[in-house]
Image 1 (cartoon, rainbow, N blue to C red):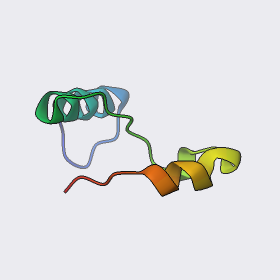
Image 2 (spheres, one colour):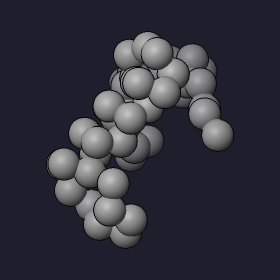
Image 3 (tube, rainbow, N blue to C red):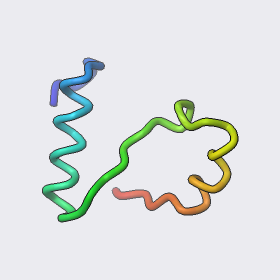
Image 4 (tube, one colour):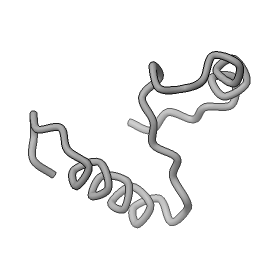
Length: 50
């Protein structure tokens, strides 16, 4: 993961890292990319990891 650089490769690297770390499938999205019709339901079920 290259800090400060946005790319598809970095996105996928982060997704795979999180899946390996947590041992489960991860849906990684930015909030602005969620379709408005689905946004409320998704944000009600989101689990933040820190």
